Image (cartoon, rainbow, N blue to C red; front, side, top):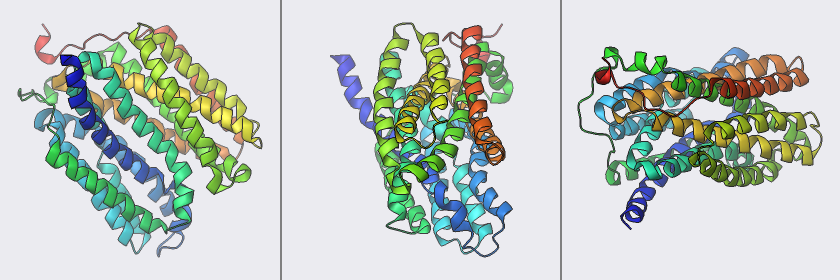
Length: 396
């Protein structure tokens, strides 16, 4: 009974935090298909600057995840979450008012610098007890992953109703409302115990832990594959379903993937963590084979569904493993490093895919398959286990 009461008290907070990070994720992704075209309308446009406007968000994310994580360990999750979300809101508003390409690049950089995904994972992990931690983390992971994929389905529909700058402003308003709820109604889960500076050994200890490093590499590979798929699939779907018909693939794929993720989480709780990780990488790799039939709606639907099943399951389980293996006092730092690896994977995935796709879309898909196989072998050979990482003070 006490456990049920805890669940009822924690889940609303988990959902609201997840919603905030999902809106943030969607606000970044929803304009992606139209950003290059929108940049052409702005004074000062060049192809290089347009590429910078698109890519700088991911780069800033990778850079600022670790500082936000470290600061959340020292000053609390809530303060850093509010700071990061405020940066995103201000960045979205500036994007709305951008009158030239340079101002848009600054706005996108500001949005990316509000890198609070790791802080969100740290906060959610600290809210629930160990029994409900996996469920709480799976909710957060499902919200963020679904938001990224839904953006490709919802974006074209919204684009038919409003301009790109109004899409920026709409996301800013939604995120600000959610931020106010977090500010006034959610309590921080961070322990009030004073933590040591990360320079005293936290980062070094984390990066020396084999299981932590393996989960980071798995996240890097998973996000590489995600960015490659989100690069090529919308191009294929535009020819098959049209921009406004992308929801016919992404919506059912997300629904099925979330259901599969719930099953995957239950299997990990039964001690099949590594088997689920290997299976998820394998499913993701196999799904890419179906994209070779790029003119078929059925093949694209099945391929996207299989990939989303593998991607969301991996994203949820590796994040849960990191948080279950990390002490609360350095959880923010751990999540900062972990999410930096993810966004570096996204950045590398988008750059490599963009560079290769113009020369050979088949080679692009083959590389993604190879990356999935590498992920499978990484888990199979490394055999990561979820063990608590020693805190600096525990070292002899």
